[in-house]
Image (cartoon, helix red, strand yellow):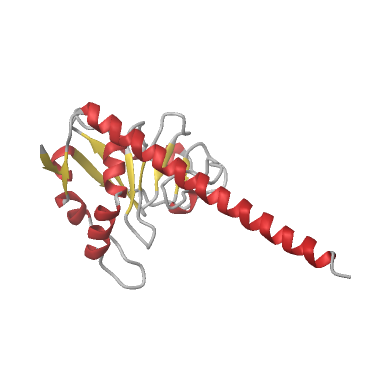
Length: 188
């Protein structure tokens, strides 16, 4: 089965706010994530909940899509995260079709072919931006829930493998550099 993103989700833009430094709601920004959409920064509540409409608060399973800038990615907001809103750098996608897992949609949006397509449609030169209409019109193949779970698991394993390879390369480089230093020290 194939559908467009607008057929399976509702999409809203992120919330514009100026962090106040100390509050009770986290203001999620692209800088909090790595290129794979994983949180890399500690999150501190920096907005006042009284200033935020309920519709902007993120729910578990919401997909955040970073649409502005050079680092476009999708990530799933998890229930273990603190109460948060997404900044205007993001579109917030809420699934309306229960036959699609949020992790599958995030995987699809992060897939290199999808990313290449979206980057090709981006507007602007200094800060490229993917428009809501481009995202809404994106077609997605929807396999069975079992296949979606398998795809998600395989993608997780591939990412773990990439991370392990990077760690091995880093440690190998350090080992070789140390061996060179040791060899230099042995020269009379």
